[in-house]
Image (cartoon, rainbow, N blue to C red; front, top):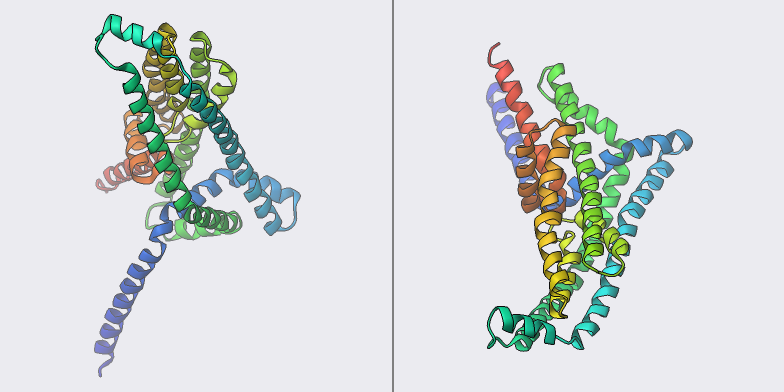
Length: 336
């Protein structure tokens, strides 16, 4: 066989093997893609902390381990606090609702809507539906808990090694990117600014929502508004959860216990003020600090949450911002 023919066959064989292995590898890591990306993003965010710890500790393994433990504490403690508060309040609310006197709500409905409406039956049906839904969600969570624990462990494992080897990996990637040095720097700067701006936007928006929500709870007579304001801060950082998990049940409870003014007042306050803050303040904050148009931020957050879940809050705006950078690079390079 001639050398040219052999080299051609060898090239095709290598490409075929590479593609086959790449496809199989993709399906191997596909269940952990979100976990891997989460670990990379968290390692990137907390890398400055790792550098400070590394300056005080000689061993990079111990420094990476300590940083990982700090990340666990930062994530776990607020979630445990919020979950404990919600569980205690849910149990208390369950016993309250069982013995609640809804005569005030029946009088209100009979006066303003329809005197033939069976309020008590409607309330029981709603409570049964909610109870069944919560039971199903709890059951689903318990069933998927082992998988979530494995994913959490994988995330920590990857994050540990990203602290140690992240800079080397980034340097290798930057070295092999076929772009001008100025474009690489621009891309890296945009990547960093959008990630930190998204994180800043999430945290600051959550505190604003919690503060405004606590004010609403105080105005409309809900007990312990400061405690529930802190819980709303934590829940506001979680997509598909949010501060509504606090103010909405409180509003409904007030309505069915005869506190119609406080109930409907809190309901309108939550819908028109607390829930709209997220879609107004966050795009403005991220857009200003990350130098991304607020429309791209809003679309990125909403679309990112749908595709990536919680991580979409950061990844959505980041992807659209990087797309904008590549469009700018294309427009610059096409004139050369």
